[in-house]
Amino acid sequence: MKILAAIRREERKLEEQVGKLQKQLDGVRAAAKALSNSAGREAMKVKKRVLSEAGRAKIAKAARKRWAKVRAQAKKALS
Image 1: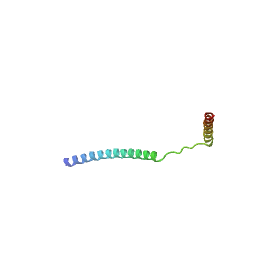
Image 2: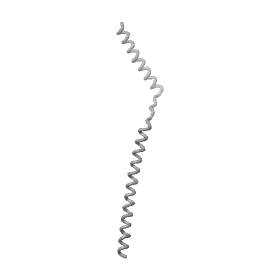
Image 3: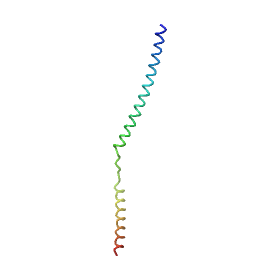
Image 4: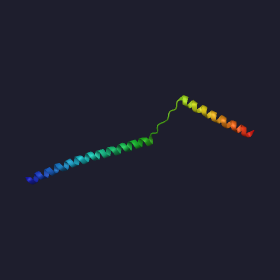
């Protein structure tokens, strides 16, 4: 009887260890999945940048101004 009781105690200890290891394994798997999902989404999904009409107009106006300056300098150089 003592041997059987000792075996059952050992079995319970091992079951507890298996439970703890299973929780650790689940945690590691969840972390790996979260990292792979976030890395995959970041690599695959690039946010499109949105520019307002006013911002676009400012950029266009500045570009026209820069080109006007370049053309003026080119005319000066030819003269």
